[in-house]
Image (tube, rainbow, N blue to C red; front, side, top):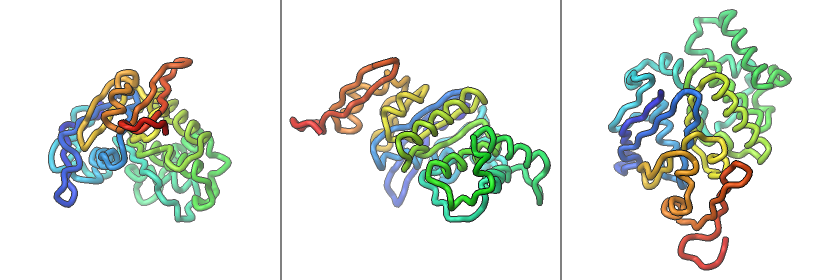
Length: 260
């Protein structure tokens, strides 16, 4: 299990996270939702070791990650940032191979090369393997960055807005790929998400952040209620289940009489 326990983070003297906890088991997806600026990205960066929290701890299989060497941590956690700019001309193959860095000596081994090739095939990127990254579409580049994280052979993934800037088809494709990998490989995933419908559809559990604190956590049905959405987002919403999936329809800003 990956656990964040009572994380506290301050920025320029302001409290961003206040005793926030989150956990995910292998083979499961936890989505972190909440309004802009609530601390979703900050939480993931604290868990990834990119930011140093003022308090709390992060445990992987009950082992504290604080103080763990970066290369060692990278064998346990893969992090895919939001809107990572692709401004380099490395090939797709070399970019995915870079995910093997925690294991590399001064040159890649046969195992590193074979592992990279296998992941590229599993992610249906073989046709793009020798294409430069700066010639890819946004959806293609996002898949490559996910493949690079998978090349680390981690058991947990941290994904910051994995569908950001993608069109509807590529949003669904990306989340279907993530869900398949999580279930088939027994990976645990934490995702920061904006789209409540996609979060409800692809998550095992959802945590809703509000003003730097955990407001609620549970199954999609437990979290995605009109009352919770009104309190956290300030929006009146209709929530119903159709064809086995939750559907969240925003109606109006709370307190307004006219619909959005």
